[in-house]
Amino acid sequence: MSLVELIAQADERGLAASGLACLDRCVPLLGGDDEILRPLWGNLTEASDAADWGELLDQARGKLESGDGEDGDEAVLLVRRMLAAAPADRCAAEVRLWADACSVASLQIHRLLDPAEDASPVDSRREGRTEGMSPLVAAELRRQVTVLEILAGHGAAGLRRALEVSTEGRRVLRAVVSRRARGRR
Image 1 (cartoon, rainbow, N blue to C red):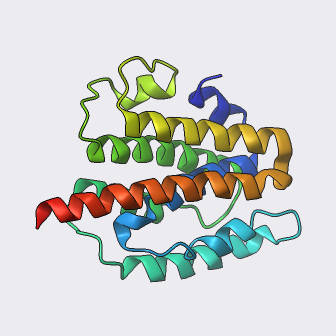
Image 2 (image 1 turned 180 degrees about the vertical axis):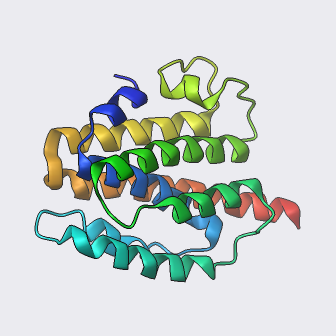
């Protein structure tokens, strides 16, 4: 199943986790640490109150807006837009739009940071056309699909595994960002 189809079929929790996972993997571009979005992940559990989502989101924004990302950098601007667009309410309609936008932005960010050429539009990648895809974009696409499949199959019980997938992607992107910074010196 394509990423577009998975997003179309996802429930509210899956959509929120999908958007959050995309944002989480891109946090290194804003200079954020690994724990900044953890409270939002915790808010996706069965026991938590969805009403707290907006307050937790505001706290994360406050911490990340003061990050040390390079403001003129296109990848950094895309991450800032993902963060700014996050809905204060976790209702399915709003979260679906955000998750879809985060998916596109995250793939575009990975494309910008990958030195390998990938001339195909991001939308074609999300629809399943993966031939000639650059390695960093291919890995991000796999992570996005995996997060949605885990949550579709396991619901709240899959959150831990979805977070692990996101953490792995964050480590990869952090290494890319570090290598990129060394190249600019």
